[in-house]
Length: 264
Image (cartoon, rainbow, N blue to C red):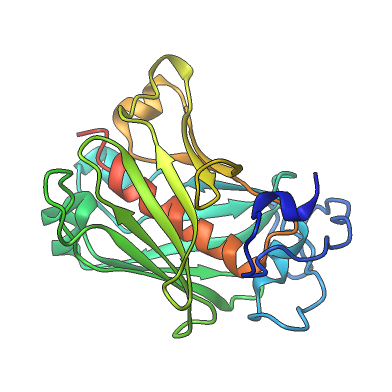
């Protein structure tokens, strides 16, 4: 499929020349403990935020939330932690929520937070900032949004909710706040009986499907007794790494808005 097919008539330049093929999976990064293998570090980007070079070689991201025993046993909400992997199962990043105890247990899934994404060298390469917003579809003001920064403190894009009375609609924006892509989800969020919940990423006219964010079914026990979710993000491999990072932010916003409180 040609790269221009995704954005007919657009001049933003968010599709770039295809990168070289991803390397063969390795067992572990040198100096790292055994366990989940880390993705080999690619060469640094010539023109891009440091740490995003991992995204230049992939078209699929898997996000696995870790189960917190404190939440299961005591029913207290703790800071969420996630492993971010490529399609080989190699860890690309580790993400950890930074929020206040009171906001987690009083505001629930609507809580504000900072989510820090760390690479395999221990560098914070992406920061997500979510303010406190209304989480009701009946209120068209103060809608949900998340800011994506790379490196920390430098915004590279935003994901903002678009008001619809019954549909889940979002705008994917660049660092200037300009709409680049759209994202839409189903009217009813139901992943029962082993089904996934898909959010389609489309061109601005919603005629061309560019990618997809899917919430994967994790099994009846895990779905019933925890809020630890698994997601998959699919996008063109030659999509600009900044937009790939913004789609990671979109996935986390979806998780907190629609799936963080499912066990309750």
